[in-house]
Length: 240
Picture: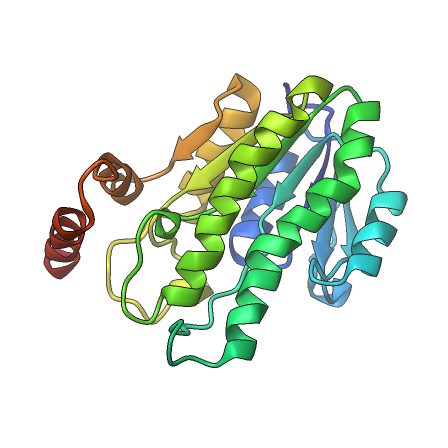
């Protein structure tokens, strides 16, 4: 589908990758961008940008947003968190927060907006996932588990929404140069590179985006057995 003239809702739109989506969608001629955030005061107002209050972990707010933005043609599930929590020894509440935000959040929004997408011609859902949907590392257990669930959410909703003509895209990447990755010393891609590749996929009909070399490297090793796969991954991480 063409993004020029489209109506798009972006979750987590107040900073980082989400704010980049809003800016690039305006450049591509989107007619209206709903910039969703828990606190709309943190959204930068601009022509064609309509702030909308949305905490993706709150079912009532999700339903309210779907009613208020019934003209949406593209849903960008970008909102996410990383708490650095391990699965065995980490705080259970933090693990649930990651699952609530990174998996149940896009699940709730997709379910809520699916009728509007159908009514508006099918449209598209774009899920910002991660290369950590395919591997994990010490301290990343909760995040990786939530992103693995988001990957399967993407595949499942792609199949379930095909009959109504909704195109579902999954975006995978390594580190992006945002506040979330500020303390990590490793190669990072610019948000503009990630967002550009993601929006290109919406317009071209591609189903999956491997936005950087790290995402391509990780996916290429999925056929290996776990010991070989993690030897390969940790060797590469040590060299980064």
